Image (tube, rainbow, N blue to C red; front, side, top):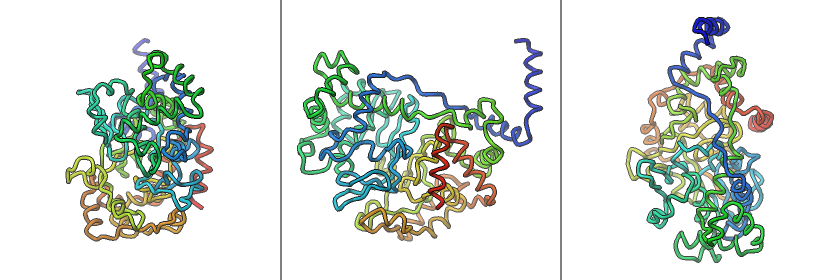
Length: 439
């Protein structure tokens, strides 16, 4: 194209920009922000198999829970609970109850939205699954799996490794006193679950699905847990890839993609609100581990969950105490409650926390709404020493001191998070959920 024409078009484009748009353009360039493209295409036969496995009771030791119970598509791939209720529970979402047997999981179920990208190498709130690209090695909680270099190359990525670990958790899906839990070692348990699928009550269906997804390995009789892992990862990557938000469209040049409140909220996000310090890059996260001075809550009889030290439990490094992974933010309106322990039910509460972290820790009380979800009493860690350390170890100086956002700035920031980052086909659900949260 003629250089003069390009300059003319740029001049016309700039003249159409409002002062707010121009200010945002400067901040966007400063932080090198780009839109998020769709994830790579997946093998359709793997996706179909993964969709079945995602809702398969046979993957749980006691045949009573599925991946979908904690990651329901209609609940933002979460479960709408501060702490998930694992094996033994009944129902879905906030309708899920312990029913005398359900196990409380010590952390909030993280969203599965937009996890199927090759540049995402860490999984879980504490990063206990990690792929080292330079060494082409996985790190996981299983010493058995870590020692099996012959299996590493068979996993499609970190997401595939992550999805098989809830199957080993006695609280989440494994349970106790069943034939899978009684098997020795992680690999034997995984193998036992695969045998269930291929030889159990749905064996004809799964034999066919595995054959279509992995014809060569099926022919050789070599279907194992990596095939379960890869098909689940393919399903999650394909079905929970929701991009093209108003924010993405704005970054791509559509100045009308966001309304004025969303634009003002983005400006707060990038400037005074200091959100960009951690929620950076194309995923709106640096994938790092940070302490943000959260109050800690949990069942009164589970002392470990009242002093959850996050990343420290993986690395043992004192500097990692109370550090948890910075989550991505697209379609965050769907994944309430928020934080690793689900302490906040609304985005307004999240913004209030960051606006004054010291006050947030001091004044937090477990709500009757949260308590009503569980049979055990849910309490806050009131330890002066622990809470002082949580505040002192806050990773970012900007949020250690009050941000002093005005009410209008907080409202605009919430609007950007709620609708500016909501994929358009999900915005109706956004309005339904936000009205529910504010009641």
